[in-house]
Image 1 (cartoon, one colour):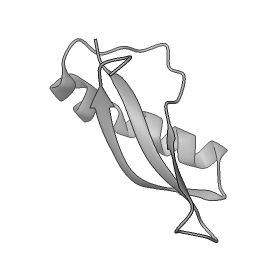
Image 2 (cartoon, rainbow, N blue to C red):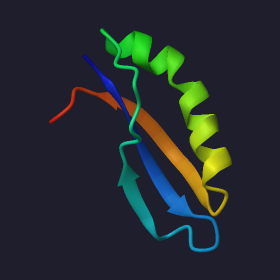
Image 3 (cartoon, rainbow, N blue to C red):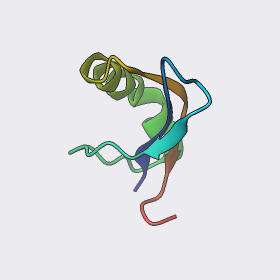
Image 4 (spheres, helix red, strand yellow):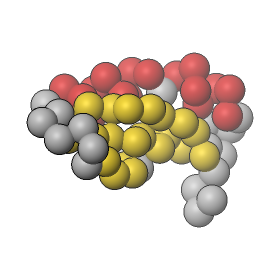
Length: 64
């Protein structure tokens, strides 16, 4: 199973970044499926966190 991992940065301080693993009910069986379907979750996360930007996202196995 794979989960979404975000690299987020403050909008006003783009040099201040962090890793975020948004809690999601969805786990994906393959990395390809995760990458293809997680865009909706990225947009939703951005709508809930307007002071942050998503620099990149990827899919990883939990605990990796």
